[in-house]
Length: 199
Length: 298
Image (cartoon, rainbow over all chains, first blue to last red; front, top):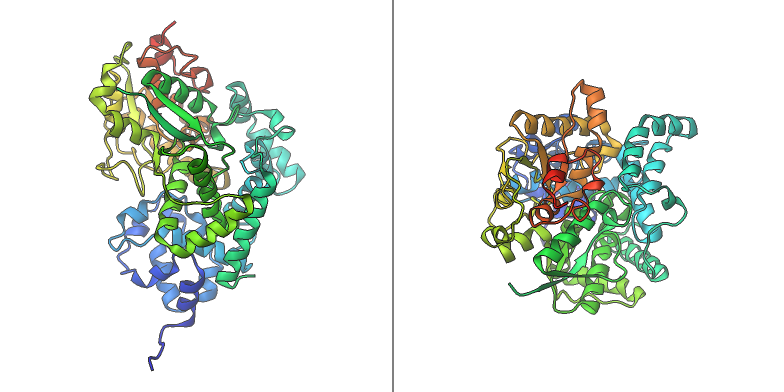
């Protein structure tokens, strides 16, 4: 009978995180860390995250705001000598931490990402006006007004160039088959939760 | 050349009065001039972009693209899917790879799609419009249709991230792709050599991490100016928006005086092929591309 010596957290990541089975393949060269556009802002660059997973540092990894610094530029993926899908692993870790309620509170990219998904899930297509306003007003009404005022010239320029429509609040773009679309997403979520034991 | 027909996935940002509506207008003009017919995928949905992962997770995100592909297979059979948005193309192609390489992923996505009365088979390729231009036409062929060459204009070809990585255009290097420069030259313009061609603009994090993203944007524009460019051209709607609309913010933050137009390749081709400023949607620029307006057919 074969024994299993790998630590629990590595196994957890392999089972539950998107592309998590690749983590063991990292050879710690650090090219991902050096290639990341937001590299200096990551408390732990991908290379370190991979080592921490293998060292069983569950809480430090999942509560970190590092993964939320990923801009999805795919630089790390194309440069990784062992072809780890690093971008997807970072997204997967961020999603997993968020589902467990461990991701840092008020992390702006996490808030924006949730808003973005909920926005598209509602109508099937993104409502850019609601998304921008949602982002400005996420920290309350008065901060929202301040944010909106600060960005006023950007917004007006967009409206003038016909690239932002104030009417989008009332008559938004969207898919026609909303019920089918919603049922599809609900089912996809159910299946994913069942497969990853997340429900 | 014979007429080409594609199943078209325009994407959210290109819709009427959305942030890249000028991309769509100029794409339609360009395609008319190149004899390309675009059959829009009926009732397409958002691809989830690069930020949908956090709330969406893996299967729901991939199912979004599976729905578009299934709709395309059903309504536009026998064609390649073509997207103009970098994120739309990337998400669709990525989803297709996962679906075609995992029987379980495909079965799961199809179980979800059944709720919408659809099924994904995997019959069509997902391509970017830039691939169509480079691979199906080629620079020599594209050159033939030029009526009003973009002579004397110096462009910084800003390829950015997602049209370039992880897939990119076949045969191009990730670190220094040349196709956009060649396209500029085919239209009679001059492509400057500069070091920020594939630098990330911050992407969706321009919203959530404005300070960090504006540093990226500053580096890109600074390098374009320093190497003599008068205009930036890009194949990506988020690159376009971020690099154009935040110039005022960057100027405030860094004391710079940036005011450089950021255009799409589809606008360059439309103008060079004899289209008007309106057909090229130059009225959609926040920073006017006056040199292109001068060349455009009156």
